[in-house]
Image (cartoon, rainbow, N blue to C red; front, side, top):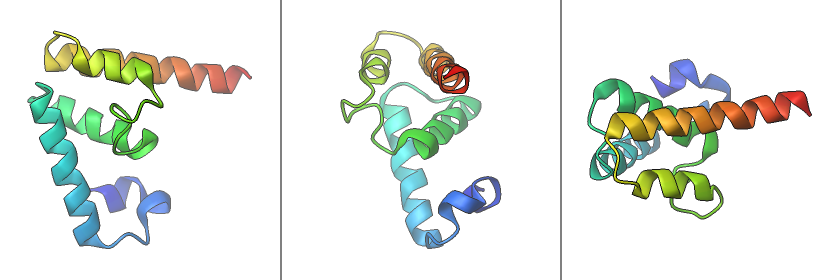
Length: 94
């Protein structure tokens, strides 16, 4: 899936490395209460854009706050996607 939808970014990454990343990302999502398949896929897409540790690295404090909030997994992913959309709009308007 990653090779198909993100060919330019992950073209040279070996399949086993990508599989490991997907497994780690899905495990992190589950531990944060993100259990619906569609939500997990959206979360995976965010990690491909922002980095595997985007929600814990401190670079995106808003993501850490969302992931630590007492919300459903679906609500967390919706807020993460909203914030990402805002960031993209800011970049496009600059």
